[in-house]
Length: 262
Image (cartoon, rainbow, N blue to C red; front, top):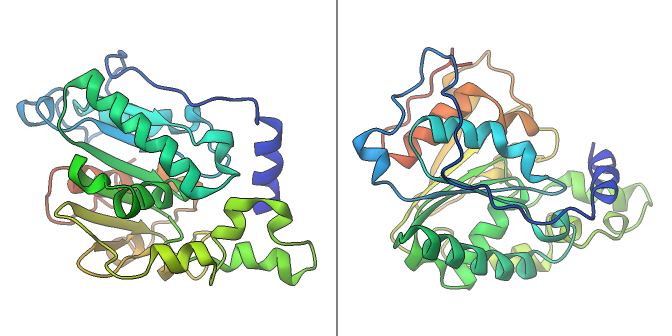
């Protein structure tokens, strides 16, 4: 799976970061758990930046963005520079500039972040090492290898090199210098709310508990609430149950996943 993702990234390496206008008209999805579009609370809510993962082109996150817009949020999608193949701290520095652009465009003092996979690490580096805690209200990660993954290490074991030369893959390997630095000290700096979401069927984050954070984070394992729910790594972006967790986190609500959400 990782090799297929790398191959996909190489084919799409000419893509650039895409800003999705918050005013884009998107019809509310036909689902029973949909909230009214543009409620009083969401109209005044922080803008939401969806941060893509390794080889994640912006359009792949449009279904998640559409759900958020249908619930009244101003939504932007950040595609990682070079599709996330390069240095994660460098991607985080670029992301810091993007956050400033969104705040300037919307007039918002703070934004909320929803990061998928590597996007959760880029967002967290921004918070912890680049002073982002002062401009972020909520952090949500979906299948982010906060403490690394053996899937990255397996390439070394098979003699295929150090993550086939992909810097971000090397940095997401368990025991990397990048993760040692990121995870030194408090996992959840600042006063913002941290939420992580993980799934037992994640093909890329192994062990799956490496996707959670310590120090007061709300850590949600989908199957702890919905034992029969099957959600893969990429499925976290598309899954209705996962979205109900994201929506709750953005409103500071208790964790109550809807196991029947489409």
